[in-house]
Length: 121
Image (tube, rainbow, N blue to C red; front, top):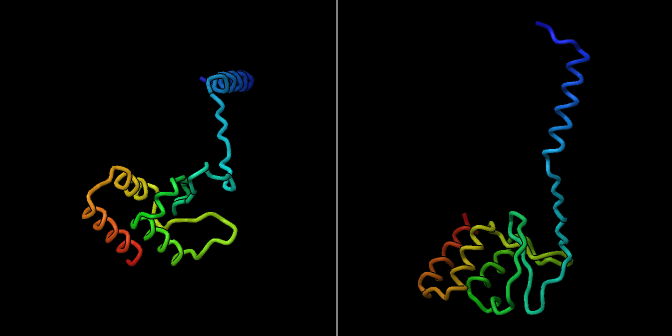
């Protein structure tokens, strides 16, 4: 059985209308990379492009200092752009959760060794 071309076009248009009604339009706002951090915070980016804002107190942490040292070695000092850390967002989230929960210094030292090992394959 063959379908009439006019009927086929009519059916296709109907399905397009039905499909467009069912679709929800989602507009994702663009991330402004020049956005300033909240007061008392600083912004860094991970190697996979994710943005993080941390309290300035994190700058005194040995793990975070090592991240910044590695960033300087790998990417140089940014003159007009963001600081990019040489790790992915999952690793940074894990490291920061350990710091936030005041984990034992031995575990933080182990993490520091992993950070250094990751930067020197």
